[in-house]
Image (cartoon, rainbow, N blue to C red; front, side, top):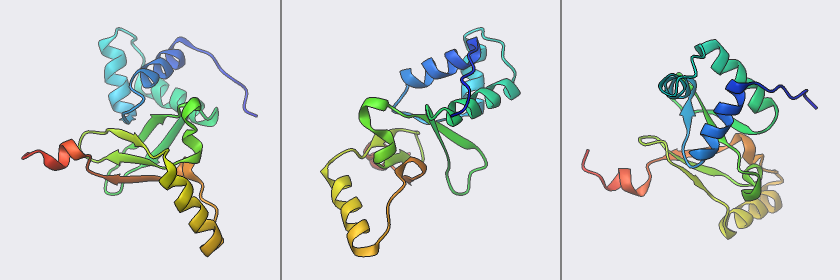
Length: 137
């Protein structure tokens, strides 16, 4: 188990991501929010703390195809975020937790019919949320 490291930056990042748990952010987004809040951390510090939070299993890190940045999402313990998939809106960054009966059905089907156990922690489905899909932009 990795050693826990505490700092004001790490605490701020974790609190920020908990506040916006239904959104995904890249390190640059978090860095800008920290600057706006007067935290004064450099981007390397943000990355270092994000890496620690991923190691501690507080955050999920993922990539979206055709994008350079890694994205981060808070893993909500009481929602079992490591046992269900997440839907991520490519346009607005909204995160939808797929913690419904469908998840149980698809996991069972994949295991029974294909002999494959899903690792949901590292899996996201990317598309457009209803609001972005319905918008005329």
